[in-house]
Image (cartoon, rainbow over all chains, first blue to last red; front, side):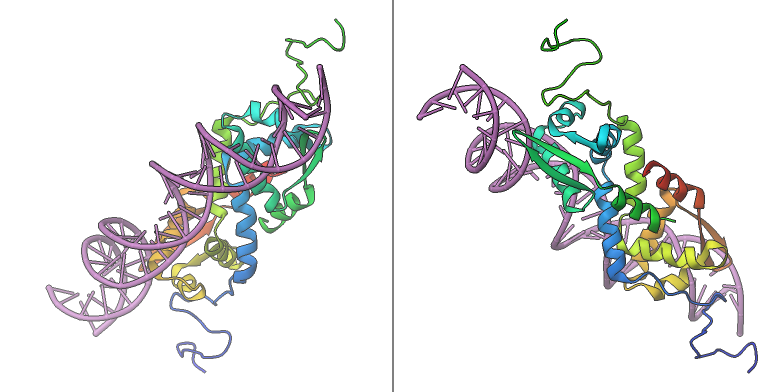
Length: 114
Length: 114
DNA sequence: TTGGAGTATCGACCACCGTCGATGCGTCTG
DNA sequence: CAGACGCATCGACGGTGGTCGATACTCCAA
């Protein structure tokens, strides 16, 4: 077969002269995008920074509502988003709600960003 | 000063008994959120996976439009988003547009996710 | 120079997201 | 028990983002 002949074998050559590369599976892409989307908000990054810097990587809501410049319902909403994504876990201790960082989930994000 | 006395010193104690932690600066949080937002889309993750797996970490648009299930304008739009975020760089070679991955920018994202 | 192929831009539509005030639900404390 | 406090949920609003078809732009080839 001549080098100028177009091939129909699995090792096909595209118009610009490169071998095609299979993209990431769409389902897996959806999963990863959902995780990144949960992280892609400035207020949520601030909340995570507070929790991450706190002893035991856990913090109480009352400390966070004072630290960021949004209303209490908005803080609650953002925390729920992070819990739903599996990045935080919620635990009630009496009147207060505590949130703990899931370090493995965050490590997983760093992993597929490599 | 008694332990039950509320303090107004910098080492204040909040209602739930922890020392307050300063959150991430809002401007820096905006910067990081913008980067993560650019990554937080399944189609963009698929495009990045193609580029990342290609020799030299660069790929031609024509290979990508065939690999993902969206229209050509949409592919162009997503690539522009990644270029604007500084994750990709664009280069024209004759008729074709090539995109190269900025590995340092990705490393920076992994860095502040630690 | 003219045609065609590869990309980018435009305009529009629809869905989703961040935000808030108001309100409901638990929990502790007089 | 009643009130107060901490937090979650609801409903609504405005802004943003993903998608497409149509179209303009750019470069190469004939």
